[in-house]
Image (cartoon, rainbow, N blue to C red; front, side):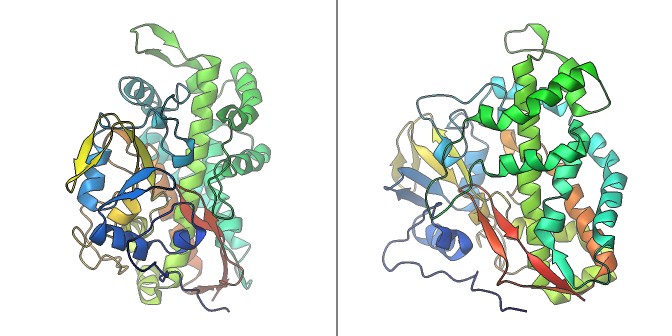
Length: 406
């Protein structure tokens, strides 16, 4: 097997710290850069792309719970932000109150933790089918064969998307803000991402079932004007697209980090193999250690001050929750991976108003996948020569992660 590349090292520039979310070299190993920001420039400004950045735990947490000042209504992905405009209605992750509250509450009524928990036996069965074929083989790809399959199938179960069509829909969503050659991703019209779902909504309306798409078509609610109504076809399309996209992207990255981090920490991997009750705590530490979505973006609605410096109104601000999770001001020895760590709170799922609606589902998938892997193997290592990072300006993880099992 090939040696691990220096993912923990980055040749940060002499002089002032520099952070660029589109720099693939920085994204390969962001933690030294983020530490410099925390220590030397806790309010950082990037003139090239005209954004500010907050990197310390307390600052990140305060910004996440202050949507009145750090608003999401202009977008939360840096290259998608439109300071003078607004995102499509129904994309509640890109909305502020009161619209956000109305739309999120509607989805919360059907995307419940109880419904998520009821999926657990099906997720175990799915993982067993996927992994059994590799027992006795040399290994498999933790992403291609597992990490990108499980979230796709699970969200497909929830939404009622035929299994044969799930892969094409997943792949279309993955290209939405993928970075190449250190440039901002090309902006894709949201309607292009939504288009594949339109025919399924038409079909599901004629063939109702016990799935989220059917519930979205039939749910009644009071909108922001107080009018009792059902969702329009366009709104159902928006919600379906949002749930499918969110259900695939970050969970895939969590599963990839699970394979990579535990490959590099054999002693703790063996502890989990011997005692699977450690799995929930291990997943939380993996989430803290390698946040699947470590960079969020906002726009300020008023002038705000940090460390004696002012951020003007209508400025783009990056909230580095991945950096906050490694802040030594909040976590002891934060760059050490420790499944026995007592975590009072990490910020990998956000915090406050925009706390990830799918957090319970992502945790469930993470626990089940790890449980099924360690049922079969105590040891695995990664072929880093064939591994490939998946770069976006907001999420971070692996695109390919081949492993050899023992």
